[in-house]
Amino acid sequence: MANAVLFSGGKDSTLAYHKALAHGIPIDLLITMVSTSKESYMFHYPNVKFTEMQAEALGVRHIFADTEGKKEEELKDLAKVLKDNNVEFLVTGATYSKYQGDRVNHIAAELNIDHFAPLWHIDPEEELEEISKRFNAIITSVSAEGFDETFLGRRIDDDMIAKLRELNKKYGINMLFEGGEAESFVLDAPLFRKRIEIKRAHSEWMKDRGMYIIKSAKLVDK
Image 1 (cartoon, rainbow, N blue to C red):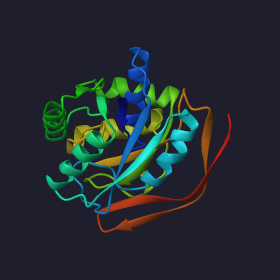
Image 2: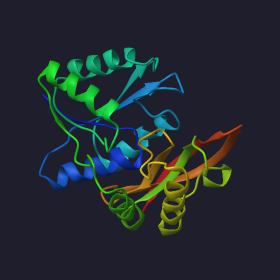
Image 3: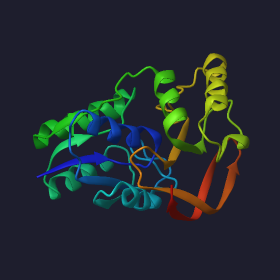
Image 4: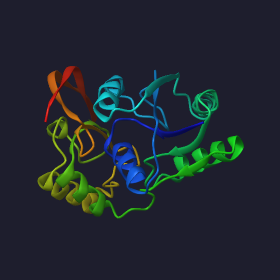
């Protein structure tokens, strides 16, 4: 049986991993869902292949599971990988998305899995302050009014928190991106044995949205 984290490599799932360990919950598996669709309702799309590097930095077993990312159908893919890997305890980085929370809870109940979401309804600024101070997390996609290409690849630091606060007041975005406004990727965290250094990357902008694509990276000593 396994204690697993549904792991996208973004700020929420990485912080959820840290919170689980802080609660005394040992984690022996990271599960990354790889969607062929950019429009997945459940799973991150950009740069998920580099979660393997994050798992190595954390020293935790890691697996990929494929999904076409079709609405509702992708839930069957998640249920299958949980069942195939004998997961009995699942940690997720869900914060405010009722859509995601309800569906993971439903799958967990069907499979008799305990679901722990340590960030559920966390104060957005509280989480972002912790990310800013203890993690190196960058923004890897944006897709909401108010964002532009200058956000791509930027670190979530105090200056970024101020910008997100402004966007929240002006456009009503969720500062933690739970509405799909943006996505992130963690390059370093307290429990990483090594940090990730990006060697090559580029930004792609398409009308009103964009992605920061990591082409190559390496683990380096901290």
